[in-house]
Image (cartoon, rainbow, N blue to C red; front, top):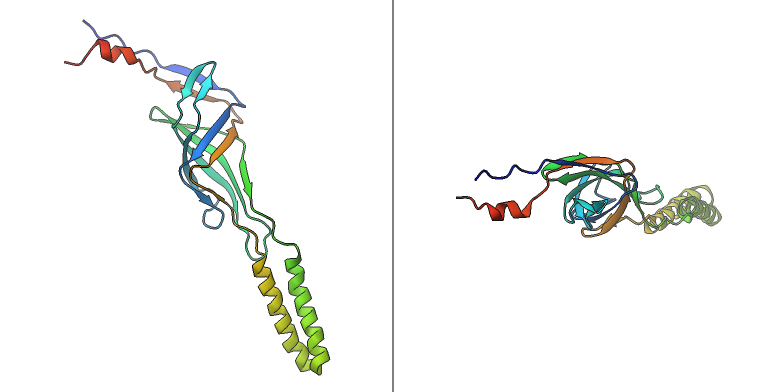
Length: 193
C-alpha cells in the first residue's frame, strides 16, 4: 500500500505580547561581554497558540546583548540589556522582537568623585600648614592618592546573568512560523522494510 502523504505544513502566528521564558545556557558578564554578542538559551516553557504547541520546551533560543555597560573607573553602574533574537524550530530559524531584559548592578557610591577632590584639597591644606609651598604639593599628591584608593574601593558592582537563569520576555511583534506536524502514528503503522 502507498504510504500516506505527509501532513501539509501549518502556518501559525505567535501574537504580540506572548510571554516567552528562556533558560540561559551561556552566561553573560558585564565585565567581559560586549554589545552585539549572541548567547544561547532554551525555552523554559513551551509556546502555545490557541492550545497548539508552536515551540516545545527546550527549543533553541538565541539572545542578543543590546547594551553592556561595565562600571569602570568613573562610570556609575553596570548594566546588561538583553533581548530575544531568534528561535529555532524544526531546523528553521525565526527572528523575533521582544522587550529588553535588564540587569543592573548596585550604583557606585556617589561620594567617590568628591573623595578624590576632597582628598587632594585636604592634603594640600595639610601640606600648606605643614610647610608652605613645597609641602602643599606633597600633601596634595598624598591626599589625591588617598582619594583614588577610596574611589577604587567603591567602584560599581559588575553584573552577570548566570547559566541556567530564567529570563522572561514578551514578544513586541507577532512571529509567523511554518511547522510540519509530527505524526506519531504514521511511522508505527507503516514500518520501513
